[in-house]
Image (cartoon, rainbow, N blue to C red; front, side, top):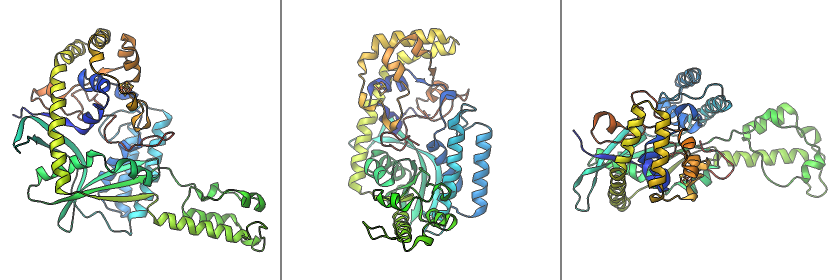
Length: 425
Ligand code: SF4
């Protein structure tokens, strides 16, 4: 039986704020699953898993039927319950359906991802010491969306959805270490195979405006508007022109300032939209090649970071045991009291990092507890059962539900990062 303690990228991300790590992985606290909102990003990787890079009508219907079922049963892909009846639930499923249809339409006639080796799989490995020996204490694990083969080489595929423009998403995310970690795990799992790089398969979730939303604007008023193209596709724009009868009956109307005719304006905008559509504005597969040097560096970092986090886990284990005991006694108020006391006694050893409070552009799950350490705030959390609590193999698997099915996936895992004012999917 393995004695490795596994560390994940979610845990490494969480450790960016020591306080968050202490509350989450240290004491093992988590918001109850019923308080979790159904973010589109959580659905999206499951949708991609079911699509498996097939774009025929039958597969699309199957995946849409799965979305219907998941919505009806208020379950996400990992069997976690959403709050029923909340606005966000219908919103997320509705967005997922619309996005999927557009995604399939977009990729249908374009080259596919390659030969799928697997999708949705956990990979893990002992980290390697400086001598290249597998550690006997620390392992690293990751949940990969997909592994594909292209021209004999392996590529890690990571499906992402984001509500910021893809170019901005790329700028912010392409160098994050998670992709390299996955590539390293693949190299460990497929020795002798070349891991060529990472493909971020990104979908922009801000739906284009439908043709029905465009109204004819008074010529003079429109031409005074600043330059810029609307948030829609060339197809929707074309439909608006034809169905709403824009422009063509006014072809002789010239704007005195610009010399642009009414029809000329609509056609020019249509062409600009077409160019933008073709520039991977809505969907993009970003290829990030990796080198042996990249992987060697990642290997060293995983060893050092994994060891550091493992030691932290060992240090807090007696504290978590106290919380677990209260949890097992079925004593929520006693547990809240114990959390509050442990926070007052040890919390300052794990300093706050305010720069992470709005990571992924949503408020940190631990904001109220980190602020007050009060029993009232602590009472809003439940204990998160780790696999090591169940079978004693020392492994940590934070994405796996416990026996009661009440463990939620990491909220700070692999979501896309978004700009202020947008929501992380
Ligand atoms: S609210 Fe901010 S400081 Fe507090 S735990 Fe979360 S990230 Fe850390």
